[in-house]
Image (cartoon, rainbow over all chains, first blue to last red; front, side, top):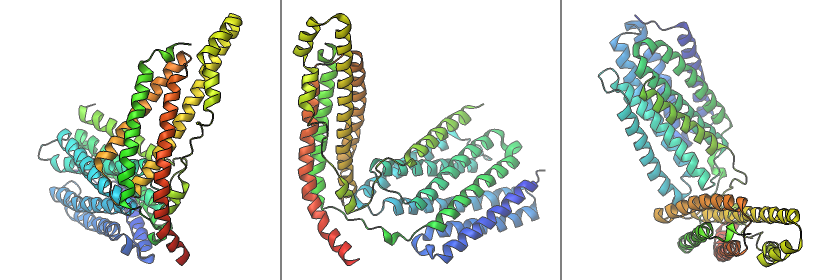
Length: 263
Length: 185
């Protein structure tokens, strides 16, 4: 029978302590008003730990009750993490109404594609099915965060440092969890103990990053975006594209011509 | 090692690489609102040098000089012409990127954007970058004549002029409410 290692217990304690710190900072700075979903995510994650600890203590770490309790509570936490990621995306790009309309569609498509890819690649037997879903959701979160940052970079939108740190924290955690889940899919029960320890280490690091980010986070009222009249874009965008096309044609001609080859 | 592990490993490594690249601060990263409009510069720095470049890359001049000097000096001139052309091409690329930046600012500050236009611009800018590298490689191997470069210069500068006019118009529109906000605070 599997036993919860002392390492895992120590890390669990650290994670709980950090969750309490993040929770306290968010309450102290009234950030639950600005980021209610991220706040709820921290709260739900914090509640998960004592519930699971109780179940593990009563039924044992390797029992089916522990297995289902862990995965069901985890699915709730992952749903809240997804919601927190959506809130973060909106906090970064939401004020840019035009590109946000494009971004959320793109993020949905990429997120869904990542989820589908992981679901197809993962194991489909009874034991691994839930883990496959977790793998898919984590991969999907990581993909969405990366696409969001790429989008912000492409449009040169300045991402507030704290929000960027929270985004990086979510993305890194999801990346490592994806890898961890994949190894778990392969080695299964032989890896379960190590999986917990690695997951807790990455989670503690993630909480540390989120904690430092919420600590220095400024209220968003500092930022004022002044949008342009819609006519500006309508006359501007087609003109730029037409010129770019002509420029590419000329470059193509230059490539094909003998002129560049002659001295 | 199984297929799942390798595939996911590669995908996650790719994601981490992209995360690193996308969060790395781009030089001249953007501010917000009216400051974005104020910071747009559409001045094509390389257009004023056009006549000197024309002189440096003039084929008749080169042929005349090549006939007058020895082989070693002609080779040196040839290398010099190539160096000038490459530098000029790099400058043009800088101007082009500046113009693309302006287009991105306008898109990001618009209340509504057309997915079709945005996709088209993205595709065209990627195409430009690829073709630019190919032209660069071609010039690096052979010194160019001037006509090809002149065409590019004209295109970039005319694009700048059109955009400058549009940015001027929308800048005025944007400065109105922005100025009102800044005077209140």
